[in-house]
Amino acid sequence: MNDHEQAFVRAFIVADKQERYLAKLASPRLRKDFLSRLHHNLDYDPRFVAQIPPAEQSAAPIFNRLRRLGAPPQCYAIAANVALDGRELPLQDALDAIVGINNGVVLSCVPGVLAYYESEDMNGRFVLSRPMRPNTSLERTRGR
Image (cartoon, rainbow, N blue to C red; front, side):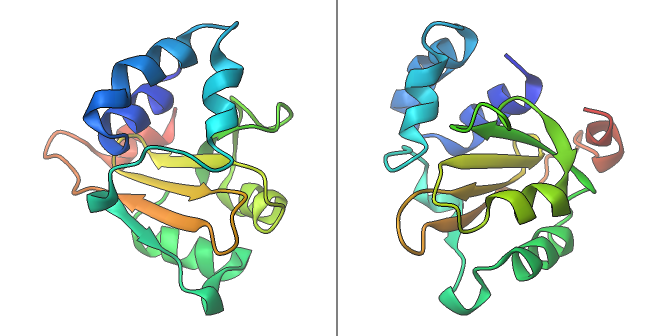
């Protein structure tokens, strides 16, 4: 399991599901079970989620929003699409590839602080964010 994956679950998934999700992500055999949840039923903590308004649900506005919130140029993908899953990608390229394809994906921008989630559902595009902890720095996360 990658640092981005663990930080995403700890920061954005409801507490009673975290251990189960972490176990699934850590297991090559069970990982697909977690990834399939990305399509519709991700148990995110609603306190840290903002739905992207319908008029801004394309790659360019989402990219601009994430960058304004502190996203570095690279992100880490947790995706139902095996070609993207577990890869570090340029944020703009990742958004161009996934926005609107209706396939569950999380792009972790700053581990445990900022992520983008897209589900299969109509208007299912969300920014997940938490305040940056004092010992978290963008410089430290850029190399991950």
